Image (tube, rainbow, N blue to C red; front, side, top):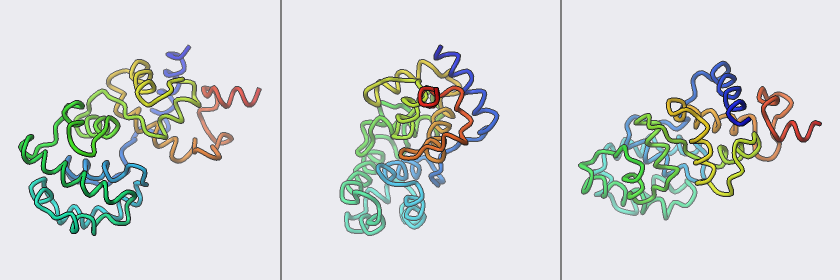
Length: 211
């Protein structure tokens, strides 16, 4: 049943959302990594307001690794949890410079050795930059997976495992964005726009509530 549901979802998204990409602005793998770290518990819109001068000042890991805490903090002070994220950014850049020849790795496990990089962030980088067949599970993906009936996982790892099993390898990178964007603009947390949602026929929650 789930595979049939997923086939319908894929067909719908391919027709109605053929292009689905990150809404974070970036011009290099390193800058996307910065943006994703900053986006934790913060909106992409806010991150995109902050990053242009930050990217200009720190074009590569070496420049950021040599920066002071005070300077980096001043750039990102309007972002959520700026203290922790300042430490993470400097630590991440230092590790890239010292251990990865200033190149953002394409391996999820290697990415997770960088300060400030958890599995979700690692999956985003691996899928967006390197087109790896992984699905990052954020709050939107987690919510949609439950509402649509794709996963009953109790945590992000379980949901990721279910989605990985359901979506074909070649579609996992874009499926991540399909779910995020649909959750961000249609299947929102408090008042989902069910009446105008094209996924009604395939949504367990909608079908249950409208019997």
